[in-house]
Length: 424
Image (tube, rainbow, N blue to C red; front, side, top):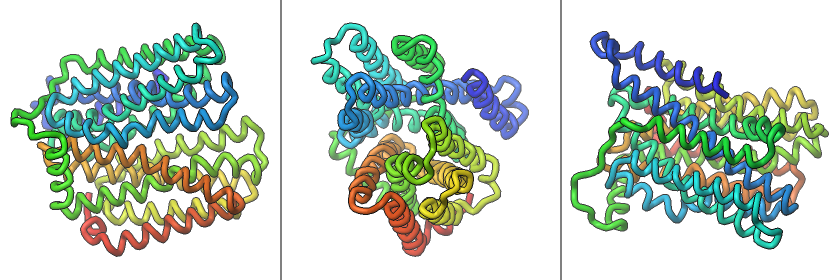
């Protein structure tokens, strides 16, 4: 993990040193803040996803209930649909780094509850305490996403905001991929308490790295949450390109739910993979999402972003649909890996575009809308995929979901001319 953190910080450092004038790179205070912010983000997202995975695994193993593990996952992400709106408003009112510190304190409290549950809770209360811990984690996720994106908008130079956002999204993908690896390594040697302790260390280090990084809140008088939310939606509606980027994020994230629900069943029932092979097959998605994020960073200045978003979404959806045909694990893995790379690139371009179009005064609210989409849409599409899989075979469900999403993306490309014409 340390090597990955170092590589991530090194890539961020290389980009900003290479792109800044010589008189800035001698002392480079902005570059130092950016590197610390990226490393802080990587540690925080790794710790956050560790909690998500822990809730699912803990309820499956200690309680033996897939239903409760699903409820736990829903609490870990579903809270944003209630609290995410206020989080966006708050990030425009006060310093975003203050919001980050408060959210990460909630993550620490969630881990402390899980630790106490494992050590002291009775069998009767174990479920309630674990679900309460998941709720605390979900509450923290509601605030930490928009707060970090709002902080990034203040830390990064305006002319580097898009590539800076792509680098930030790479930390999100790295954290998603690292979390199960860290859990597996730590738990196999030291057990669940060490997993909880490791998460606490990651969040503590993440908060320490943010000390001294200055962000600011608004100096305007507050007008009430609902009024400020209406202003945020008004800003989105007044900018056709921003509106279309928000809609494109919904289409892009709609693919992730069917993947999470249907791929494990495909690996087990159709490809006939063993437990270890299934883990490698499903882990390929996280790895290739990261590769796609790196590709967006490297190729971003050369590609037409609007065309890449639509073409990438359509091709990725068709690749997902093609998984119903492959009976060879190797061929299926190639299609899955290609889909993951395109998905990572598309999401990176979408979030960079939203960040670049968001007005400074309303960045928290707009990035709050994006954060809610990134958490709620996968859950909703996953539920829909689960319902579909109960009516038809898994291969038919994959084909229908992939083809449906490809059709939706094609229609979106026709009715979204501003996004279609968006350059780097």
